[in-house]
Image 1 (spheres, one colour):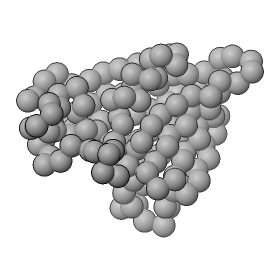
Image 2: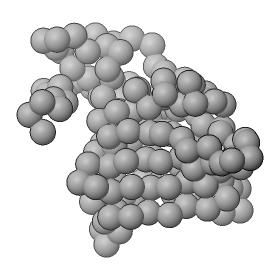
Image 3: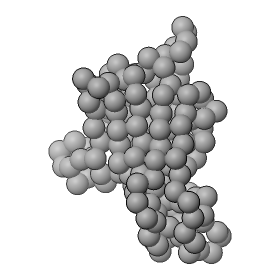
Length: 146
């Protein structure tokens, strides 16, 4: 079931929750995570499961997508394998912890296996864009079997 490609922006927590739902269970290669200090932009290229097109019995699809955050002050990671650009991680959730003084805070990307990426932002400014045609995949992510 091919459909239109997603193009989403987030400037508040409610918007980020929508992006978080769209990227849940995306597959990420460590080599496709980047932070451009000069541009203050964090970007991750991912293979996003198309939840919006997934029926209970398939067919299932994934699509290449880019998730980026602007106004980034710094990035920290914990338990993210950085010894191989080909290391694969599954993105479980995206959340935002606001600072006491808005609009800044920390965007948290939680990965399967306990990995985490913390992105310190001056304000919430995120974009998710599908970048290619969807392809079929044999499995739907199943959290009950995990």
